[in-house]
Image (cartoon, rainbow, N blue to C red):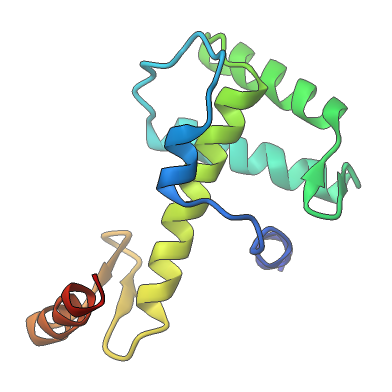
Amino acid sequence: MARENFEDDIIHIKTAEEKEARTSSNSECLGTNWTPTMDCYPIELLLDQVLRGNKIGHKFVSEAWIEMVRLFNAKFGCRHDKDGLRNRYKHLRGQYNDIKVLLDQSGFSWDETGEMVTAEDYVWDSYTKILTVKN
């Protein structure tokens, strides 16, 4: 329940890959090879901050970011800054939005075991044709 509310709470944040690429970061871990564990931990930290009331509107208060960066760096031995962690969050948010778009289409489903979107070949073929026409 809390995770669903968290996802609803952050749905309005724009996370296009192009915007992320234009955003500069002073993070000292630019070459970080992100693992699934590293990706999950900031989400847990963000959820904790939401539950503690450290999010106003669509933004987290500065103290929340400071704490999240400190905890993340301590856990993984990195030296990310606020921008570095926020950029990763934006990247993950973009992936979430892409998956949500697919799952809203007829014929696509989520495979819990493989943790991926699945569909019959004809569904993928039809969807990619539509994308090609749009672009």
